[in-house]
Length: 480
Ligand code: FUL
Image 1: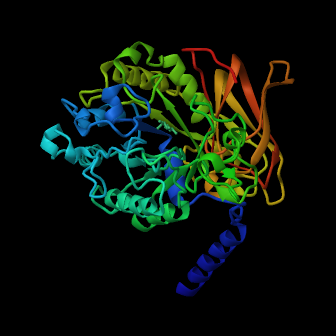
Image 2: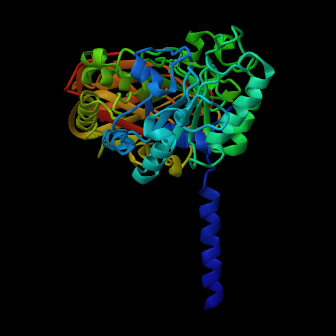
Image 3: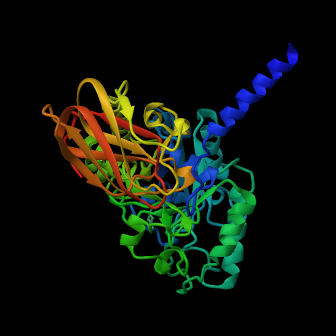
């Protein structure tokens, strides 16, 4: 009795194996697991904080007395409470801005919190923030400016070695894991009147040696790239791949329109990060509080960054007390409430799906599964194809959310979407280019239909799609 049973089992498993179609092979440059996890964070908080908070300058010149830095009620737990409630997953602090002042007692500098009267020189903002991050489950990241207008060594080879030791004192473990190292490409003159020739390979190696999982931001990566503007606008066409050969951060970076759109099929993965401030300036100023961005502006920024295959790094600078201003924190909570309202109900749920696929495990229905690692995929060599969603009744929506399965590379380069009218004819409601990790298509007018068709018109390799969701944003009207 035992033998035939074992045989049947073997035969059954062999036939299942024979039917199992392998996933598409990765295409071109693909993100590392750390880069995928980074992009899945979607929204992080940027905190510009330092002497400029107290002087009102955007760029301190490095001559500010250390005592200028004197937050009266520093409370990083408050920053994190606001960040968490608003849905941010990580925070990046200006540990050292261009004025050279260090928010931690760097042994490499005599221009730090240790020389200030703040907490009698015993304070350490990085300690408090990294502890608050750990307590509240947010990831901790640092901006450490290579441009230093205070350090007398700036403009000589000795400075690069000193900068490495500066990185070591932050990244060496004292503050735990760092998810992102932010390198500003700015390279102005230092106190000696000279500019520095930065040793980027050495700086990057130092970060990787101490924090191998960190995603390094600069104009050209290697981990992620600048989006090319500070207005909060990623390209409507936005590839996460970028041609980096011959380029470097700062003056040697590609033109901003290239940074904004990426380069299709390029050999390096560096997704766009959209850095933008909730206020006119990067640092807090009482006079700018009336100009804190509105919910409408923030939602537009969300659509044009996260909704265009980019991570949003929103700057919300702490005030002179060392707390997030109540106007900013209230605005963030209103922004969160707006996002929760818009994205509360996926109107595609429950639809019947149809379309070709490379096999059952890659069926069109996967776009409704809610799992990022289950995706629709076409057969190798097929770079065009359509899927339809038939709803149990009429659906009205004006936002169409799409997600490619980026661990296998970014592929889709052109698509269009149609709705079916009651007489059975199709009419086009959107025509776009890239998708990437997340693309939210904004329809200028709401559409009501019972059947929707997505057509992939061009793809660099057989397309993948993890998600297709529909929402109705009744708060504000936008298109684009
Ligand atoms: C720029 C800097 O010069 C600004 O002060 C700010 O820090 C911004 C995020 O990056 O390059």
